[in-house]
Image 1 (cartoon, helix red, strand yellow):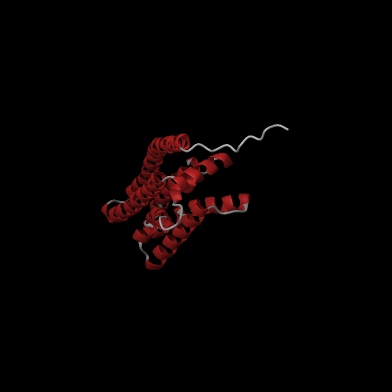
Image 2 (image 1 turned 90 degrees about the vertical axis):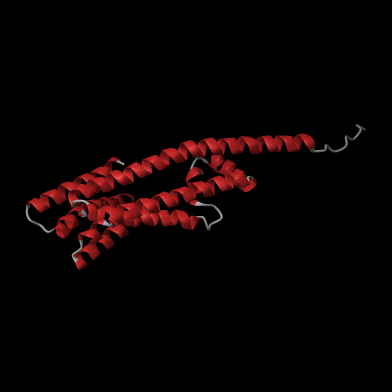
Length: 219
């Protein structure tokens, strides 16, 4: 998170201010600032020899916004980058609702092997738990898409130097709030559902205990 803020927000903003001071156009000043987030992704790939999904989305959105803004000489397209990223992630959350297990479930079951087995059993057995995972996934999708739309709408309403700050504060605040809500709400509801499912299983076992086989008499 610290590197994201430094290389994705602070350095591009300072670069923009410096470039504008030396009479670069708005589009070219923003293009110079985009070097830092692209560089972070490239360095991460060189170090680990793998590219995370969020890195692919960020790189694609940054390059698309950069190319569009330079071709059309449009600061708006350059500033649209973060909206493209969060909006696309929101669409991924929404699309995962069509899959057997939505995206939030995969995040929730990232623990050790035993925890994954427990949550997979709970997901298979409990309709309430499946509904919870889908409800939380839908919430992420709606919030991220709405945040992207609001950010895109306010681009023309403020100076570029101000928008660069507001844009970064928006995505950090939205992700922090959504993660906090997911942990608290998901943990509380998930634990309650798990306890109810365990109680139901105990009740079912007490009503229909396993029958033991007949004992053979010793010869």
